[in-house]
Image 1 (cartoon, rainbow over the protein chains, first blue to last red):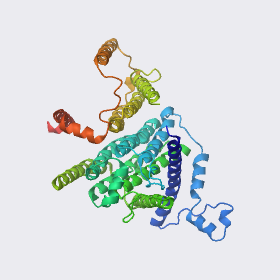
Image 2: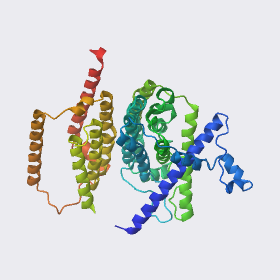
Image 3: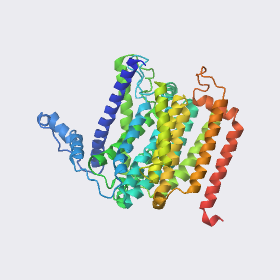
Image 4: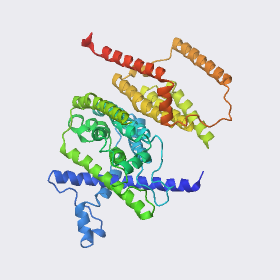
Length: 353
Length: 167
């Protein structure tokens, strides 16, 4: 084993997890600020740090922006009483939040978040797998266990219904999601995500080639992350809070974290698959110096944040689907559409040959 | 390194597989299903050690991600309380022992009759998706198609059975 490789990979893992956690904290803030903007409110604007809060212009500005709010949120989550009801199934009750969180962090491992840092051997991806996309789908599909087990562990009606709903929903939309990306790989001819970006660097972004795929993928991503038009598993108006009704304190925060980490993973997947990863039109060669390498990572994160914004914006704009509408959309609209899409692309590629 | 991982995953597979069918601590069907997930994940680990990355990914995607979620779905909907109290009867014990014994005999016989030499350690397929697809759609296209027709028949059958007013 090459120690250089191991150290470099470890550093990459730490950086990526740090970045995801920071992004989690600030996407919660963004969610609150944007929802406030949409509903004509102000949003969090009170939390200030003792010393920095009194720096003339910047201090009040950051306070008004809610910049320190995530610290307060985190402290609140940790310090609140961690209450375990007497009737829950203890082992699963403790396991479920962890199982909900782990898959979303594992997905990030195969995502190429930049080109290189100057040295062409040091690719900016933790694991450059040949079956990258299949790995992602496999891990994403494990995410459902956290929610199902949470529903089962709570041993009461509403969480249970939430868990059941989530298992059916995730399976249905996984199929549509998996089928929607097949045309991309027919066009590219490789399952490796780095190769997908390489192809896009030469031939332009894949969203221009496969807009229908992007649409299906986007909507399925909403369903897979339990975001609002499809947040049936925790539907407040019907199920109290769904699968996390019995959870409090940090355990609840872990579910919350899992949802946002899933959003981050889904956005970065979409950037890689449809928006060319770190490339921009006119900037298509892998970096050969450190600044360009960092710039590429910046471009990737920028594109990702735009997609996160879409996730947040849609949540506050659209009402929730009914459960039968959700199933109807998944099975009777998206799956036939995705199948037809595959056929069209296969015929087109065959005719072009 | 590789050997270490092989023994680790093999041990995990066997241990979790045993806990699926004979868990001394709990007879909860959900627990069994969760151990089945662990068994499948460790099997996927074994596939990775054989450089069959595609199989490993599909194993997790299909079995852990879909089939066992459906198991859980059914278990939770049916609420199998009686199952937890059920004792193993003599008939199921005897049939179980006979089938396990038969499979073991076949397994051991296959190992002793195979002429694979340990010197040839380079995998033929390297587990990549493209050669696998080529092989599946050229050399083995007939069995593959027959299997898919079988699945289709099963699917149509399930739909027919679940629609009451169709009959």
